Image (tube, rainbow, N blue to C red):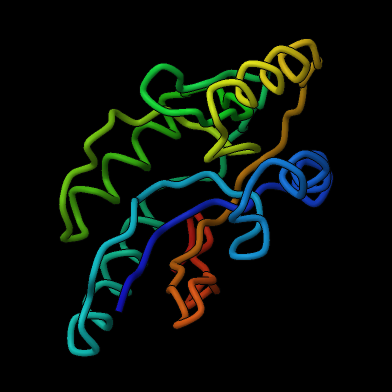
Length: 170
């Protein structure tokens, strides 16, 4: 089964992201707005218990931290994804690195850029138009992250929470 690890931001930030995602992100119905900490990876039923124990260990080693979304950016020319840029704090970087060191799975083909996707799979023309208007938006949002989630993918392609891990706790 396919799993991933993500942070779901506050409802306020999710509502803002969804106001654009419903028009520009074909994955809108498959997963709420999120910050990916560990890209999709495969685990068997036998492996999931061990993975959960590792995630509990990682969660205990990290305390809640501030997360700031501060502008609209794009991954173009690599791909036509538009996102809310999240400040890459030492706490967030450390959590990402420890999760990836403790969970099997292939390394990502891209370096870790903390973000919340708001538009993807756009044509070059659409990307140019949408990015041109969205980057004028002032995004200034700060919140405290106190948990992350292990997600799994259902047969219809949507993602749901398998387990939630609170930072600083078992």
